[in-house]
Length: 257
Image 1 (cartoon, rainbow, N blue to C red):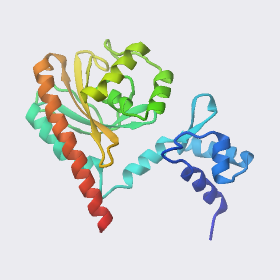
Image 2 (image 1 turned 180 degrees about the vertical axis):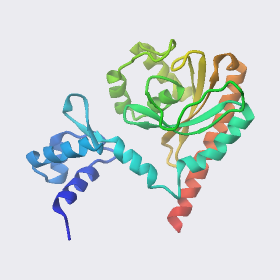
Image 3 (image 1 turned 30 degrees about the horizontal axis):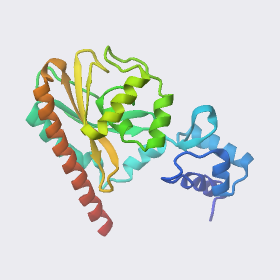
């Protein structure tokens, strides 16, 4: 038996595509054939539960964080965290520094996995910790590799509040740093989130070449010399490559079963 209201809600969610990540009310109505009055009520309910979110000024809509959380559960057999954890532990063992796996959730970055370093004084970050996209190396990696139009819009609208003494709060400085990341392949942050801390991050690419996460290492700033940062970037980059490769292989196996 078809439940018409549920069917309409699903049509709304499925109207979002890679080329239509942001839609106006009229766009959604056009692609779902749902009248504007009814559509507005549906979107209000979906927004209340986090399945969609209104853009700046309420003139457009995007998919919300609730779908991100459900999406993470949908890959039980091909879990990014499961694939990444062994490689993260290797980096933590070799460098002695804590390692974190971070993904984007809308305008924020979220830590979804960690491997603690072996030093007595080390950086910790709880799973589920949220940071704005301008603060910290891992968050900025996710911002730098967003699609051009989406990134430009994000850069214009992000609230650049200070979290630590080194947080970038000037938009031109942030934009310059973001532009340099893809060519360098990594980013470094110093005291941007916590006083006395330093972080280094690299992108994690999917088998399709899309950045799906940031792999980061962090610790007290006095241990992150230029020489150590270079070594950590090498270890993180090697681990990132293996994570992307193993994730692709795992998904191929899951599809063939």
